[in-house]
Length: 116
Length: 220
Image (cartoon, rainbow over all chains, first blue to last red; front, side, top):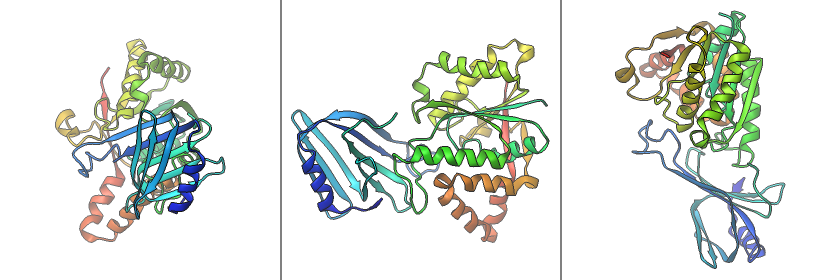
């Protein structure tokens, strides 16, 4: 992964507008957050292979970045994004890493399902 | 002792806090079989500096696990193919069935797992509960001793002093090598350990933590 290039991600979001996609969206502060007193509790949420289609997809901010996907019936939102890549399988992988390099948020789109 | 069975949900669970004990077994010629539940697909650590992505992490962690097993002398690794963070939501009877099959095949005298409700990570407790459940299906006389790892803050308060404290000094280098093998998960930790070892105020405590491995026997 490398530091986010906003225009490059915007190009991908534009290209995939209106077509069926698979979403992996996740945020976590680590399963041991409470044990290590980093936070009062461990918090994590993820959806893997949510099927979505958006009418407008936008990346915003000056870093860390935000992405919003406006859908017919709702929204997908991600904040705290720092790094990205198009992987060898043509999937858009975007993540937010903290100062220790730990993953705090993942936002991924693919034309084919992510493996289970 | 004939055979040891270790049952843990993530690559690296067999190493952190337990690698020395496993290395002592294999060094003494006691075979150790490891059942690993998931590939730790949702780990937060991605290396430091990070080199894994959410999508490459499972492959990387499986390789790290195989390397750590080679270092620890674990020759029999079995993957359950579950997914990180979902273990507690699987059918506990079906999970116990899979563990029971291995128990009956190997007749281990010791089973290492987390101590139920003291594993901190929900996957730890999900798999340790299934393991205890599987052990309890065996006739009393055939049940292995369960060495439970309790990693909650209140472990001693709730369970008393550990039943077993293993001094693993003689295999410490092997333990550290296994920790390093789990590179994506341990780089940040190893950096801190090596820094603390240079600090006279912290050195002794860090060494004690590395050298002493603690287990609580779960009575069935």
